Length: 572
Image (tube, rainbow, N blue to C red; front, top):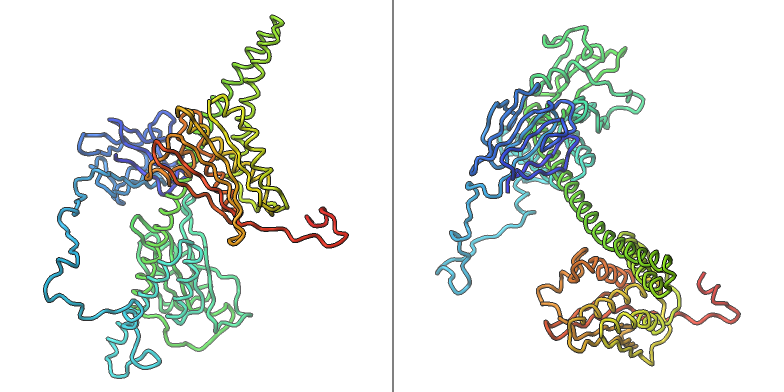
């Protein structure tokens, strides 16, 4: 399925499938894709599905439609094309692109029994050894015998290698920019530096990180002022600039800001990515206004400019990748939120329908003074109140990280209460519910309220799994293994069972085998509770034979209270 995925703009993270014959894009609500972008026309463009291709057509928009930074009136979209309208940037993807070649049938990984005769590994090298190519021979990283050109090439290669490592090890843009600026100050003797990024909303350059050289005294570190003259030139011409003497450079007006602010030399380069300029990197040498110094030799050269352009390009690619990653995370978060809302709304709707039916019976019974009808209606309302209460508690338990409130409690008593609560439901389902407590189980430290919910969810599932069995049986047992300091609650049934390949799915959120009756939250909540106690849930199952769920947790025995110490004192 082809789709457009927004990676920049106010609608970042949105994905739209292009399944219709015509998909319209624009600012008005009537469009298939409504974009919240003031620079997008009301009816800006449309994508036409031509069976085996997708044609993007500009609808005579005010600001035009661009594909891969080129203005287009019509364009047949290819997988990976970048579509920009206004300030909104989208990626076109097509999973069925014929250009995507499957090489599975053309590549064969040869096993040991088919190894080529005479084939052997001649030499191997690690990543650390490979990176040493970028260092010199002596301890200072300098080979006295090599030519100046080779030494310079080796130095530039090392710089780009370290830049590539820096941009590949972080997804935080602020940390990335700070590291890039630190590396630049290691390689270039400069007084000041700053990295600025383009704001998506205003298109203005906003400073993100700045730095002074270590040789610049603290009292000389005034608030940095960057020349608008240089920034405008770089953004307009989309090229890096080097000025060796601002007062004599014909590109700058002698009265302009760059000269008046004491800038002697400056390098400013655009951060040019795949889709446009994302910002600029600026460094300079500086003399505070009012101070006079003797003319010093130039610190910046054409090689410095080339190096800065290459570094800026690497940083720009990393920033775009980070933005794309953030958009993907936001898209997944929105999709998960939509799934959650849809699933929970479905369950709440069913519960409300049950309450409405019970309320109707209560109303009818009151009008006819028939107490039996009132009781029947109230029973229905009560059951649905319990359902919505359990749903809300499961939602809270799953969504909130919490530390168990450990206190001395009797596990047999907690589990026995769960069995007693479910006895009526088991009888209604025609299931025999049996309870066998361990006689040697001591008092343990655990959160009784949370453990009650975990056990109750598992017993409920076991009863539901036995509803279709001829003689459904559920056996609940506790076990204490003192040598291992472990306590277990096992719930075994002879229900329909779970296929081996499906066992790992049952603990996924909203994965329910009960159809409309299940929320898909019970088992994930129970597993979360056991893991918060330092334990887990173990499952063994066989289709048409039954399942056994074992809730295992550390058996922590409370220390005996000191003489005169009350239970309240112990809990505190």
